[in-house]
Image 1 (spheres, rainbow, N blue to C red):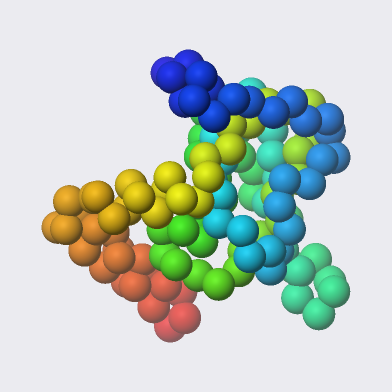
Image 2: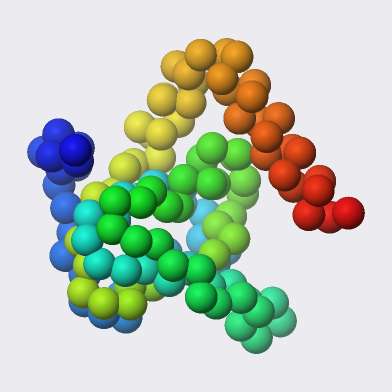
Length: 121
């Protein structure tokens, strides 16, 4: 399924413990985990406040910043075991969002607003 994307963007082999991106980074690349395992974690006041959110083979991660145009990453992504990823550059993601059907884009943003407001209440 990812062979075409792998031909276009290539893949990276990462060792266990490799940091893919860090909380508060400004980059907006997205990633596909071809195989392996990635943990998402985040800190508040230099203390880990959330851990144990895992990404499995075949899943997409790191696209939140592009999809919802946030200024910085909310999570740190670190490999748990040796892993292979495809990096989708932010320009590609931004173009896909721009070209997205306007109704679907509206639905996506409405879902995010609803989900975000329900967690604050």
